[in-house]
Image 1 (tube, one colour):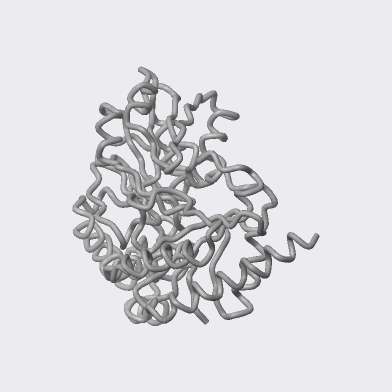
Image 2 (spheres, helix red, strand yellow):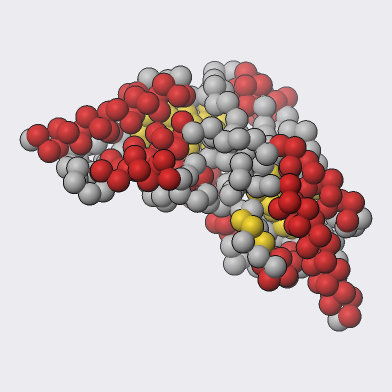
Amino acid sequence: MIYLDHAASTPVRREVLEAMWPYVTGEFGNPSSHHTVGESAAAVLAGARASIAAHLGVRPAELIFTSGGTESDNLAVKGVVLASARGRHVITSAIEHEAILESVDFLERHHGATATILPVDEQGLVSPADLAAAIRPDTALVTIQHANNEIGVVQDIPALVAAAGGVPFHTDAVQSAGWLPLGLGVDAMTIAGHKLGTPKGVGLLYARSGLALEPLLHGGGQERGRRSGTENVAGAVGLSVGLSLAHSSPGPLRDALIDGVLAAVPSAFVTGSRSSRLPNHASFCFPGTSGEAVLLELERHGIVCSSGSACAAGSDEPSHVLLALGIDAAVAQTAVRFTLDGTTTSDDVSFVIERVADAVATVGGLSTSR
C-alpha cells in the first residue's frame, strides 16, 4: 500500500509509542492526585509541557492540553470571544476548517456575535489589506488557518497578524506543525497530535499569557482552570515527542508528483497556490470525472489518498474551500488530494502518476459513456 493521506492522519511513530508506553501501563497515576503516584504523573506532565514549550518558544504555562484540533479550535474561538471586553465580532476566512466555521456560527446563533468572512483569491490566499479593512472597535478575534488541509495553501500569518493591529489572533496550525516553523507571532495556536505521529485524542492550544479565555469544560480546574478534566499524560508525552521529530521534507517529490500528474492528465489543474504550499501537499481537480470514483480506482491499485477534508467525508456537497477559490461546483467534486511524508519514494511517485492517468481515463470514459 502507498499511503498518501497524511493530512487526514499519520501512522503512529515508534518513538512516540515507546515514550508513551510507561504511562499507559505501570505509571498510570492521575496528575491531580496528592500522593506519590499522582505526583509522579504530574511531574511527567510538566516535563512534556516544558518540552513542547521549548520547541515552540513559548512559556509552559501558555499551553493547554486538549483532546485534539477540533477541541482546541473551539476553545480558541468560543473562549476568546466570550471572554473579550472588546465585543463579539469575529473575523475569519472562507476556507477555514469546519471546527472554526461551526464555532463562529455557534457564537452568532447563541451569543449575538457577528462575523466577517474574508474572501480568498484564486490561489487561496487572504489579503492583509482585506483583513485590515475588516477590523472594527468590537473585533474580539481574528482566526485564520496557517495551512489549509484541503489545498495545502500556506498563509502569510505574520503579515496578517500585523494587519490585525493588535486584535487577538488565532491560527489553526494542525497541518503545518512538524512541517513549517511556528514562530508566527500569534496569540493562540492549535496543534493536533495525530498529524504528528501520535495516537488520536490529544492536542493542544497555545494561548498567550494574559489572553482572556472562557473555558468550554468546567469541573476540576485542570490546565490552570482553562480546560477541566483529567489530563491525558501519555498523550501529552507522545505529543511532545511527535512535535520534536521533524519531518524530512518531500518537497522535490511533491513537485515531481504535481508536474507528472499535470503532464499525464492535460485537463487536470492544481487547486491553490503552487508557491505558497505545504511541502508534502498536492491537490488537483480532474474535470469530467468524479473525485470519489478516481479514489476508488486508485485504491484498487493500493494507493490511498482522499478527496479533501476527512472531517467532511461522505458529504455530497462540494467543498466550501474549492468554491471559495471560484471553482465551479461540479468541478469541485472532482478533487483529489495527495499528502506525502518522509517515507514516500520516487518510485512511489512514478507509480502514482501512472495510476492517476489510468484512473482518470477509466473514470472519464465511464462518465462520457453515460
